[in-house]
Image (cartoon, rainbow, N blue to C red; front, side):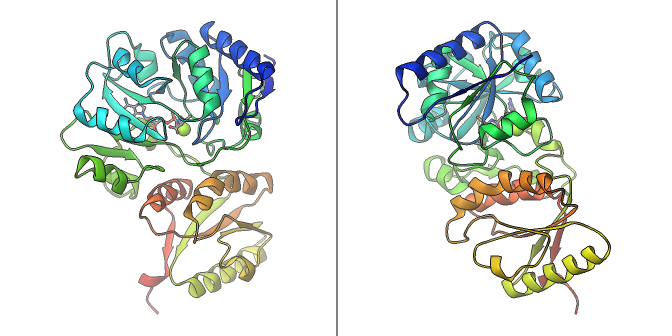
Length: 357
Ligand code: TXA
Ligand code: MG
């Protein structure tokens, strides 16, 4: 299959681009697959009400079919069509955070196919804010199932180029709306049981949700791998985001971290490894390795979230075999950053504060 790539300026969509988006919508309605930008990461869209389209998504990504898809809507009212009920908490969250990077888990309406929900009685719903996504959803029939548009296991795509790398030749169209703004996937909150619970941290933080709802739990499996429990979001149990090289996160005082990483890199280089370091602007100049990547500034956490996935991909492009990363405080947006980084590292962390001298 040849994958058509169409460019759309997300700030002002011209009449010509409008026509392209209408055509993308027609592809969705006919059961085809279209990758498109959202404010978080690029999504791989298919008609959420068409079981055949959901199957195609799983095949294109190489994704296990028990891993449910998020349904993207273009209007708040459309939520009522795909869920059994809208509890007060969902209505309040929708009012405050939609359109935006928040996904809610609710009991599914009968008409939502099990192919889309991975066989579950619940459905994940998100109303994205990206103008290109919103138009495409409208032209595509109103309900677009879209996982992140990466091949299963790879870091989520934050540019159209990443989607081309992973899915070219496997899907009908890629809408290139430029790089995304947030860079980590939406926050997922489960509203189907007693206390609302975060199943995947994201740009909408626990604190922001608690301001609206009162106490909100976070799935314990998000930041630890020793809980012995399965994560409630099926997708979170899979190895994910991982670069080909072995990644280790190093925690401690900044100067100690620099010294430790440089010493490890030296030993690894002598052993014939190709080394990489993922550092922040504040420490960047002090590192020595084959490839040193600046992920952003600690002063601006948003920059770290935005660059994380593309930097992980760059290490693969550079064929790095050993990677060391600084660690980040797991609060606010840092919770999402550390969750993704820990998964990419397979929870391999060296804590210099706990080490015996
Ligand atoms: O920001 C995002 O959410 C992006 C963009 C494209 O919107 N989408 C995205 O989709 O990250 P995906 O499929 O890569 O991740 C969805 C996650 C998976 O971990 C899946 O297991 C979980 O949501 N999920 C979906 N439906 C669920 C449900 N009914 N119950 C629990 N978890 C669910
Ligand atoms: Mg994903």
